[in-house]
Image 1: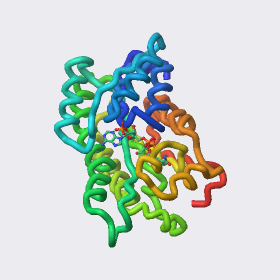
Image 2 (image 1 turned 180 degrees about the vertical axis):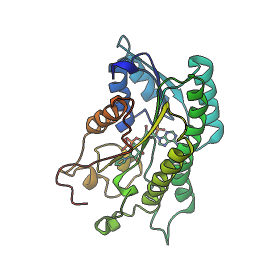
Image 3 (image 1 turned 90 degrees about the vertical axis):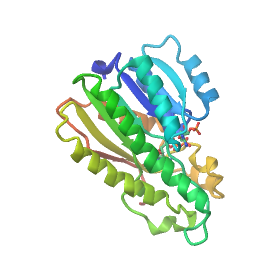
Length: 253
Ligand SMILES: NC(=O)c1ccc[n+]([C@@H]2O[C@H](COP(=O)([O-])OP(=O)(O)OC[C@H]3O[C@@H](n4cnc5c(N)ncnc54)[C@H](OP(=O)(O)O)[C@@H]3O)[C@@H](O)[C@H]2O)c1
């Protein structure tokens, strides 16, 4: 990671879970990190915690389900930092809004707006600022899920509704992006797909099985995923890890 010290990274969903752990690891590696999320208080606490480290952390309020909010955040980033080298598209939600045939339409729309469109709009804005780095090494990482690769029937009772759809669409989107940017030799694109990780995601969704899901013995810790992210970014420049699937040992799907 040494070559990334002093470079600029944007991490969406920096206020909790995988995003928060990734911020800490990147700052430890000397990276200047900007976190985007809605809960600014949580990010401000992180800013305080990460003072006087090798890198630095800067929080920016942003609701990635709203295009104006994304544009305002990246305008601030442009004015303050001029360029971006790393984008970690991590923000994502589960939405317990019922099964597809009975579900709440608003909840389903929000899920697609955050997990898919928010990711695409952040990538568009970040790409503009990656070009402003004039050929410096850049990396876009999309945090997907094993549910973006298959939909195990054993999980049907958990009513994930459009969550697997959003992640399958993200997988296709990452592929299209790779093809679009295939001539940009300085920008690598990777997808990281974790299995179950102990975070707030199920509780934030008010999922009735949240305690059972997050209480599983077969579960990853956020640091397992953040370490995988740094491994992918830190791989030699001529190596692109396109897809990294990381599951807890013993997970059956
Ligand atoms: N946990 C798992 O088992 C698991 C497994 C595979 C993949 N993933 C993926 O990992 C990523 C991170 O999830 P996590 O498990 O770490 O969940 P988490 O602890 O709930 O964190 C989700 C993050 O996304 C942010 N976020 C949600 N909606 C947002 C919005 N509209 N605008 C901006 N930020 C928003 C949240 O910040 P605010 O609420 O402050 O806005 C929070 O920082 C997601 O993409 C998820 O799909 C998770």
